[in-house]
Image 1 (cartoon, rainbow over the protein chains, first blue to last red):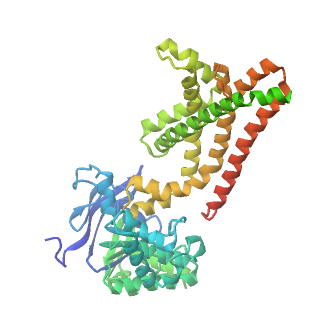
Image 2: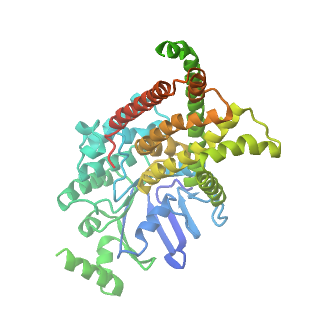
Image 3: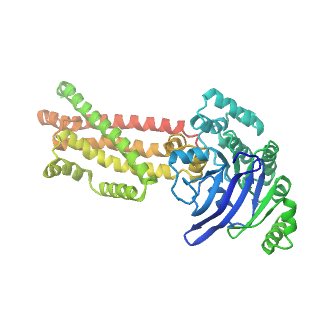
Length: 262
Length: 216
């Protein structure tokens, strides 16, 4: 039974993808269980972001299978390569929340409006109901007073918190976070990570690409280290850090990282 | 002299009504066709993109006068007979449609890809993404060149007089033919065209300001 709490909510198995002749994903397999926070680390160009984008089918993949709650993502069935209909894809994407590096808030809508759009048009909620949910989540990310502000009137950290609220308000099964603090000034990173941490404490299932090593160490159930389009190491934070001794790539990645972030 | 012009005013007003009617038809029809084809050009599969590209480049490469004569005098050769009024409207609409396609492509193309992706990520379908995310943002960029195009359409509608349609231009010429008062009548005509177009540009500026909050 796919709903059993010990079964994987997200099951990525043998996924490969090439952009022309460049193989960006090589037979990647990965599981995320309900309530887990899994972070993906690795050098740039290792396929982290591409993998994340395959999970909600912003990118297609060439072979392998990605399942959420037992349901194949993007294609009608594993192996058929028959793309789902537009309507089907939209419905599937609504089950996964995504937060982007560059926020991607809708600039013509207020903070509340950004959150309400999906609730109204995808979830079919009434204006009043959607507004209430939007206000609830804006409160959760500490922006109750900014409900009627336009994105251009918000700081980067505030915009990203609205981005998180927009994603979680849809009650996704899993939240995908794509380097969500990379575009932020250092002093704004903390407020965004605090929100992510509080969501993790509430049991939100998350798959997150990040360069915030300390955060990955402290907040993750497991860390996935990717290199050259494949999973090079995976395990609980303590195990990954211990694996450094035996994993050449991981060692050089962490060494470079330490050098640049004291 | 003034008396003759005042005497001709109702006749000129009828011509003016035809000018407005032609302009309105051309503007509305080209807007609908241009937006549909423009969406095809930006988002369609390769064959659709190619077809729209060829249509747009071909039409924009032909002088509008040639297009009008081609539709009215040329199409009967392949069995398509249009009344002069509809031939003129069709030719002007084709011309304007090709322009609207380009305005739309430019406006939609200026919206960052992340907007579509964010809209996809919350589960909006293609139509919903266009309606609630892309078009509202593209609108502000689409508006200035489009209004410009509307004023062109009003001015360009004077060409229908060449097919013998009694629009404002033709009415003026006919009154001149009776009264030999060319200068005052052409000035009157110029003022009327100017008044319409100036009102349009003012409206455009208003609208642009209203949507100025959308950051670039």
